[in-house]
Length: 485
Ligand SMILES: [Zn+2]
Ligand SMILES: [Zn+2]
Image (cartoon, rainbow, N blue to C red):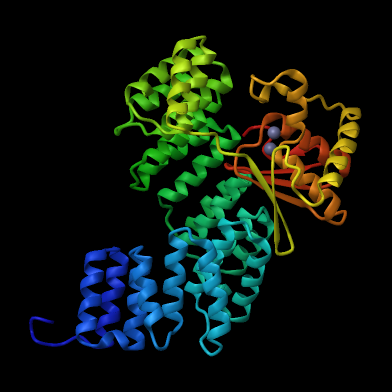
């Protein structure tokens, strides 16, 4: 068009920037921006907004911001484009700040499904349930709650915040669903160990929804199989991918290895790795090492550790697994070497944190933390609970704490793991009958898992804990994960 001497206008520019955003090509984005500047279209509301949106999608937030700040007028596209840019980079606070500014400054300019789903993603990622609910309200008022994009984000928000019932409600209310929405619901089911529901939805999405499963869908069902220990079913789904014309990726392989490893079929898991058509990734090796640890197969673990060590630099997470594998096999020298590598890199273990939402406030706790204003009451509550739990038959299992600490210290520090502080805070703060939702950045240790079961029994509370991997819903002394996590 340009070669034919036809200059682009305010209709053509946004089309070009949109395509460029999809391709996420920064050099092309810069050329387009430059061209708009030369033709003075950059001051046009539609063109300027589309440039902000384009830079946001190309992850060039500085240029997106600059164009945005220089615009004399803005519309929903410029606001949403910039918000999305921040969300994509994980700058959640700035995204939310902008969203609030948008609502205040642009009274006449309504939000759209893109704005709403972007901010809902932020709320889901940071488990901000109250704010997420308010945005759900806004979606309802603006009738965008029936959009598949908004609904998918709502499903994932509610699921990530541990309120899977609400996720089901959103799913049922929207009857015309796209693939993303089916996948969002499947992920929610798998994370909450609603295993049969996962399989049911998988069947339904094709027969009722007329939507074909993709590689994410298969990851969900494999994940569900893995966490329920359903080996045969998992293998069937893995095979089924071929019928769908989907080539299994490394993530599918690592889930399959995880499934086999957890179920104790370690040799079969090792064979899957040998036969993989691509290089095994760290998560594939990690899955096998975890299987070895669960089933105490020190021989295979140390063999795997050798194989992994040969590949050179590994992440700190895998390095820890290596060191543990060598230690378990009694190969102290290698274990020490693996530990030293970790120390040399200056890698510390991630601090375990748990948090609870109270209204619009988030209360965060670390293990043994006494900085909270209600600290005294929290520790009193734990003391009181401890006695009740012991009467009910709870015995602390201190093998989950680091070996360096002596016995007395062990039982004390394990008693004050961050999730227990968060739960105690919930118990003294929330009215009886209100479930307590705790989020944690690391895996729940075995003893806390047992302890929380007792707490749920002794107090009659429903306690939902999301760790870095999945959800646990404790009720009346039982957990939905069936102790398989
Ligand atoms: Zn613990
Ligand atoms: Zn559990």
